[in-house]
Length: 406
Image 1: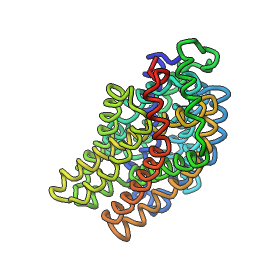
Image 2 (image 1 turned 120 degrees about the vertical axis):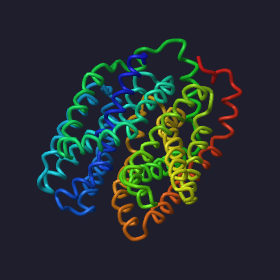
Image 3 (image 1 turned 90 degrees about the horizontal axis):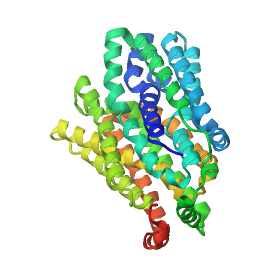
Image 4 (image 1 turned 60 degrees about the vertical axis):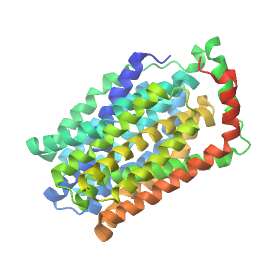
């Protein structure tokens, strides 16, 4: 059973875990490069290696969550995150630096959204949709909180001291993960949930399962590549467009505000919105946000529009990435199926920080914007195809009383 306590603990852990792992490189990467004299390729290559590890371990970890639940696995992720941050803070050689990132890659797959979503699907079944949306409210604020906090800690304690503080934050998520329930949904099944479960079974009977899986995989891959590239370079991109370094940090942090605002709207008003329709709306916001970046004048306004709207679109696609499989696939195999479908997105996203760095070096911030827009349009096209593929089923399900929320 998913309780308010479960949602709060998991939401708070997502805020911290995203902030001290995935978003770490954007603030500390340039400082590490300056201090140790390493190239951008070496620095961002560590982050890329972590994402590769996330992809390699994704199916295995997904199956483990299906079988055993997320409580112990996510708790192990808390410890690994802390150890990896300590390794980064102590790194004097490239070998130790990359070793820490490889450890952090496993830790991120154990603690971030995909593990959290699979854990909720296991204990909540088809009723997990609302909880998935709710935990992303706090998680969406990770960049808003930890980018300015990281910059402050680096100025106060240096990059090594700042990352050590991040390790302490990671350990603080251990009791949050240990508070998660373990009993699977099938052990808690009641008559109340039968209608929702029957509807979900109907929705998995698509005559084109391979096409559905492919479209979902393409959409997730495109959004993950874009998220990976911008997570590492959004601050630098804004600075390349003309904002000062300090202003770029604060404007970039609006991405998190946009994410949480959009997710709050979904929680409050989107309960009866079909996931496929919400997904289409979400993926349409991302190219619009990037078009705002091309306006350029006034620079501050276009930068705010880019970050806030991109955050809103990315925030909603994060939710639909978790809720769509509840419609497209069976909840009891959620972790395993999604784990396999995420492999290409992780492997391709691993190259994004390096590719964005090369594009920005050669073509500047405008080049990175063009690449971002292309990825956003690919994601939108896949979402549009999914929507049309299921449109008839969606209309029938909305008209059927069995599909109404219990």
